[in-house]
Length: 237
Image 1: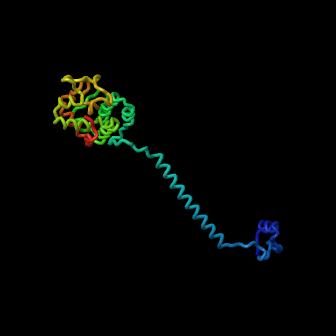
Image 2: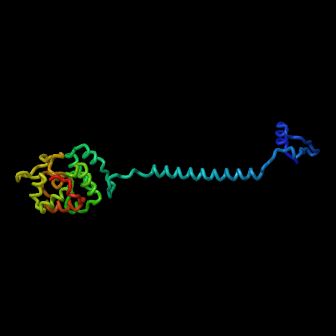
Image 3: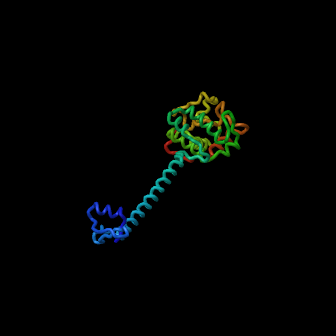
């Protein structure tokens, strides 16, 4: 068997070569002295290695795809919104017991949901067009952080209890005391306020005033159409 000088030299250094150089320069060796070559076994090992390499590459692609998906996907909003509104500030205010700031911020949220800015007013038509999911979220947050005392749903329940009589309703929730309407700075922004006292957003300067040219009754009916029905049990009136 003829081999190259390089191969012959390596085998000779290892003491595994016995042979002679032919006249044409090639080296002839006894094949029985050559290292054993398991060609089939080598091919099988190469095949297995190729399969493992392919599996590792596919696994790498999967990991990279998952990382890209995680990096490109924003954290889910814990408070449902049809327009992507962030309610974390309202949650912070309510959680801290800052009811007055939360009351004012709720009004600003309604303006933002209607596409308006601070200082603008809302008419009945704009209120009717507010996204229901967001209104329900605001209602739920007030209800949750007041231990069931405040929220549009609570006010709606009292409204029905008062047979939709506006003055009786305002007396019941503390917007009117001894036939005198309260101004905004006279409201009670605490959990000790009457049930349904907050949020108070159907007026801007004085309690129990309607918005625009619409009556308070119309505004309340529109506002309550967004509320989440809640069980009456557990409420203290």
